[in-house]
Amino acid sequence: MKTVALIDPGSGNLASVRRALERAADAPMQVVLVREAAALRGADAIVLPGQGAFAACRAGLDALEGMVSALYEHVLRRGTPFLGVCVGLQLLAERGLEHGTTPGLAWMPGEVAAMDPRAPDGAPLPLPQMGWNGLDFTPGIHPLLEGIEPGDRAYFVHSYAWQGAEPAQLLATTDYGGPVPAILGRDNIVGTQFHVEKSGPVGLRMLSNFLRWSP
Ligand SMILES: NC(=O)CC[C@H](N)C(=O)O
Picture 1 (cartoon, rainbow, N blue to C red):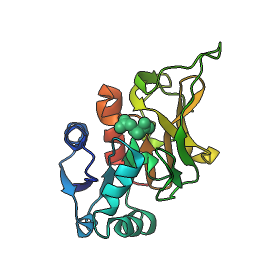
Picture 2 (picture 1 turned 45 degrees about the vertical axis):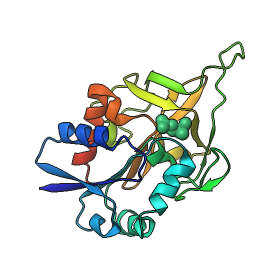
Picture 3 (picture 1 turned 90 degrees about the horizontal axis):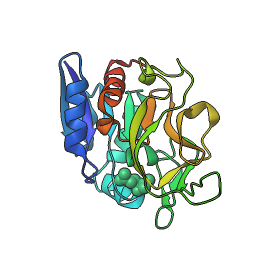
Picture 4 (picture 1 turned 180 degrees about the horizontal axis):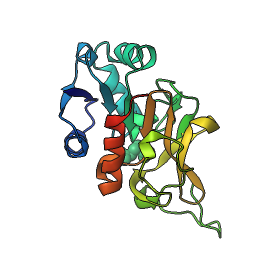
């Protein structure tokens, strides 16, 4: 049976991510809530959720002793499939600029900065971007998107977004006053800016794709 380690950085939304993973699984699987670095050993996949402010999520992760280096060991060195959700994706940037500058894990180039979305007439669009929005991507670009069509919608809640992504790592965008990064990834690492666990059948399909992924 597959074991999925769901890291608890103390920011909430764990229960909904857990439920969605359990619903998405098409083979027997156990989701283990992880607060101890040693518990990553033996995980077939690792999920890092995050909600709220960048700095608070980073502090929550740092409060789990040895977790950042265990993530480095399992994800970057051993290649365990990894999914970051919302701030769990944002934390992979070099830094976050929400209420001051906070270092990220720097697994992919870029920083997480305040959005400034504008309508065509220059009027500001509301923040956070809150609600369903379509995904733009090249079909076949990534196994996470198998069975998903460009234009399928996911559920977003955010005021900050990734900037300066390496083009090859930007797997999908959404349009909110211009293209906004929606999915980034490289190698065995992928993350969604949107709440994949709240994105209905589209989100469940992505989660089951993730659980079947062997990068
Ligand atoms: N959805 C949230 O919890 C917000 C995430 C992050 N603070 C952002 O605004 O981008």
